[in-house]
Amino acid sequence: MTHPPSHALTLADLAAGHFEPLVNQVFRVRWPKTSEDLVLESVKIGPQDGYPGSARQPFSLIFNGTTPGLLLHQHIHPLDHDDLGRQEVFLVPIGQNADGTFRYQASFN
Image 1 (cartoon, rainbow, N blue to C red):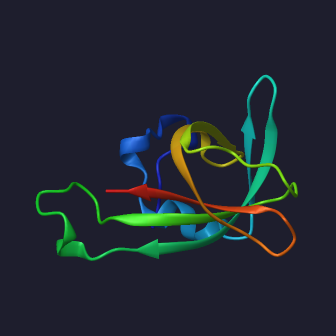
Image 2: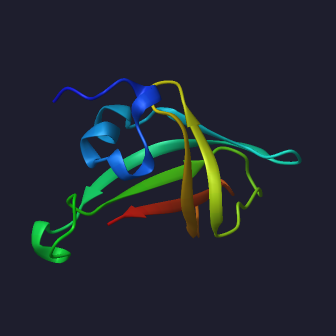
């Protein structure tokens, strides 16, 4: 699938296909007092008929943090990637890994 240039992508434009080739790549969250690298673990595609009238098929992203003990709270975070640019994404912490890093989910409907 061919995608428009990254500078043209908005959050509403993004689909699972934009993220699938980026599994195991780093996305950066940068705030003035916090920075964390998140590694995209997986892309989970939801049911096509789950949201009638939706412009895209629902999907979710699972990320793993890289800094033990650093928890990003449930919030809209600026997520940067070299191919996708900056996207403001709502991240939800969903658990802690054995190494003390945290797992996050972002859902798109």
